[in-house]
Image (cartoon, rainbow, N blue to C red; front, side, top):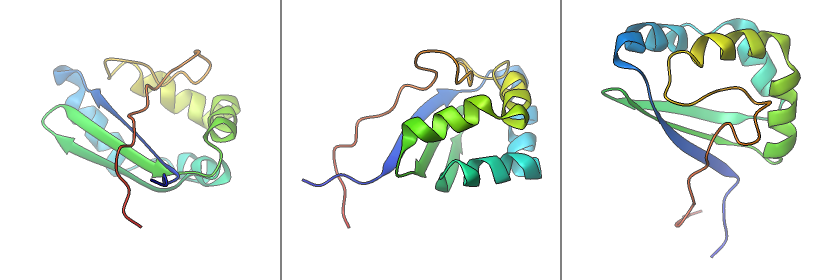
Length: 108
């Protein structure tokens, strides 16, 4: 089976930070959007159910994308805020800040 260039993971947002987390993602900073595009991230979606969030995007070179995000000053500021809201971390300087989900099915 062929695989897609999709990358997905899940996270829980701390209940007391849920409203702020959603608000930030409903109104993202323009420079965050620009940096993700510059990193080659596209078709990025986040879905919510309660305090559980599912993230999915496409990218041809995720290692390079994460390097660009890690070095980006606007992304560092954003991630410093959002890391306090999730049970995990958006610190892309950590060895594995996001644990990817395994893709087991792909329909072209």
